[in-house]
Length: 335
Image (cartoon, rainbow, N blue to C red; front, side):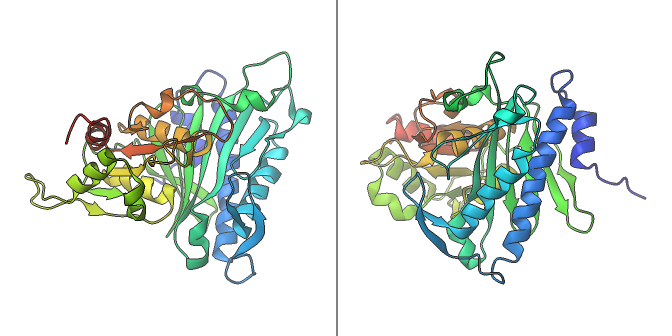
């Protein structure tokens, strides 16, 4: 009889070489993120039956139309973590200002930044969605953190990862000792270890990008995408394009099978579209911990100086050799 897979909490307790005394804290924190994932996954399973598809009619701080499920997912995070004794602040791309929990201070030292429902444009057509999270620790011991204390460099993260809602619900995370994936077993309500020490291939065979924006890109970006459509001398075929409209799903595919995902800067928007703190930083750390690379096209994502809570950034992420090729084209070092 085979050994029963480790649950999320047991794996953290037994295998994570986190700082002394923090294994229990990380187990509780990630279990709470897992609970958020279970609740969101349940809502998504019933979305078409209980009138929570479509939009709310409101516009969020990013200038985007709010989907009903965006709002529900955001509220789920707030409800779960408000009762947590580990979290003193939450910041979301759906909220202009972070939610601060002074009642949890000073015992609560962690702060969570998150994208509650990535790919929400997929909700109305039953396509994959995701949740992205980043955890930082308060630098201040003398007073309650403020909104400015959440604006941190990617290298200061203490945990990061994502939930993927697809044919199954997965939780993938890192605390700086590799990347591990857990799949939710609905019959017992537990996340079970399904992908231990994920390693991204050095080079892949697929790319993901919204080519509808091709005419908006600088020449170097266009030339790189054009190069992927030429037959490779080693494989005898060009790269295949895979793009779902959900950042989490597309990056997960690349993480498992190799390749590259791009959301590049545009001629009139060189700063990019994706959020540094809620999307780029956590995914960059996950991919780097799996042996991959994440770049703006000119610099490492995790080295980007964070200046604003809702700061945007270009993102080029995936297999290290593929990302390096893209950087060379973007920087004009290859034609």
